[in-house]
Image: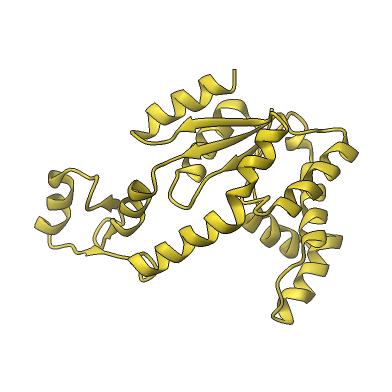
Length: 213
């Protein structure tokens, strides 16, 4: 099962990928993790990326693709993979398609985690961490009892600096501009699977599994 996971920030991609990874015994291939791992282990493309990053530049697509090809060639990815965080643009999607065809491992489907943008804003701007336990809560979606449990014990509900409305709004705008065209890209290739990603984590996961059967 070879999957690209699409969705805006806060759509639950990472959470659902981890559940699917455990269930299907295939790796979640996150671009950021992969880049750090390639640099740390000193692979051919990792060394290229390291020198580029040390110069303060963005890692170009051809190097990222090289790192992806190294990662997908590893034994744990032979039965499939979940690509998370790549592609982000139509050009990257074309490059990825070419690479996977060359490797003889074409994509099975691109799964879009579909969530209303108002809910995404609440998911992201409402995130809080209990200063005592480190538990992740949400002022819009967590129960009052859960929120009170933290504050009654003397803890504070801490908001990350970048979880403010302006920053989140910018992230969602960038997603709309760059990544939303991928929906049309995979739809044209009849490889798009859309699931309703609103609701409880387990409910969403049931929909995801059913869509992949």
